[in-house]
Image (cartoon, rainbow, N blue to C red; front, side, top):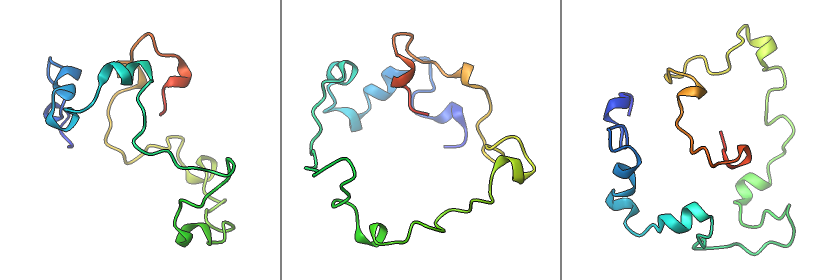
Length: 107
């Protein structure tokens, strides 16, 4: 939703508004926070590079040429890789739990 004031969790109730939403009715938030939530499915892999659970429509493609190596910030004429996106603010505006470690945050 483009208007941030209309997004779930944007009111004074913040995260409570999200956690109380019916979609999350079966979510155990204590397990989630303690990182002990059991995934509903864990694929059995032969090794870390095993791709048997991915569609062969992707895994059989030639990876060479699947990206444009000529595209970069240096060649794009811009120093902002997010040009065209509608987020206004800065990383300082994000409210992160001070107990999180840097490696807990995936951006």
